[in-house]
Image 1 (cartoon, rainbow, N blue to C red):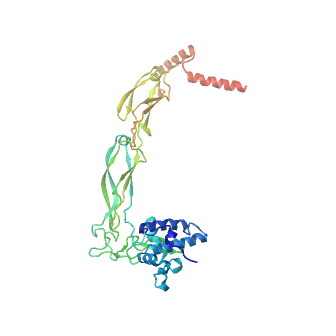
Image 2: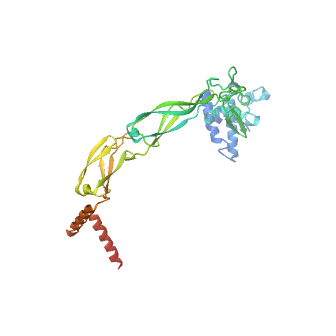
Image 3: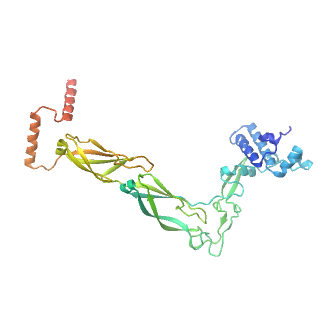
Length: 376
């Protein structure tokens, strides 16, 4: 059976650039790959065909021979280069690595980037600092380059040598059928180098533990769970490379007076029953100072008062929330004999007059009477 034109196989015009050849093969190979089409013999044959076409058109000498003489220019019996391909022993792992290396983390000759680990530090702050912002100095245990070996991990006077397992690439390639997998070299752990004579101070790691002091700027309006990223302040990379980042996790301590919910602050204020009955003015604490709150006559326990704009301005923007003040009417305790007599006299005066002094109490017991009358 005559072979199809390689340009036609990849859907290309003659004169296509190397970039266009690679893109066309990437698209066709992903479509017909056996792993995406399990058990589909037709897809497998298509995959072999596009891979053979790519092997020829991606090779400058083979492509020139093919452009001049067609398939005959690749026939070894006629002095050609040989088309290779799956049926003729082509190294598919090289093709796959060249085209898809950027997707799976590197093709031939690429080495895994060496980056230090990210660190997390939980910082407990007061509600006041969370609302208004602050600058805090923290001490972070981290790994820093070893001074004895200048971070190389090798004893002073010696140097690391290329890894013999991966030949300094930092990766090894495993071939299973049509599929090629790249993974970190198990011998050098992706570094591409081996240390034969390790530094005694860092034991070949190139790093030692150290405590660093860092100043953290806490923006106004943060809340528990928010994170502050300090780029490059994480762990140093082993034997050179880019340091990781430090993530400062905010945890706001409980406050004695206030509870925060989003942008709002809550505060519970005890009120004497005389003030609640007659009304009056209370001095209320806020995070910005004291304010006056007018309590109307006949205020009941649990009533909520709202102070506009006395809450928190969130760190992500928006206006400040409100301060919500819940009144808790307090019953007096440890009364002397005279005070008790006065209260009994007060109670008798209420009962002697028309009802309406305790609307909630009267409403409740009215419902109780109706409940029991309905059952009789």
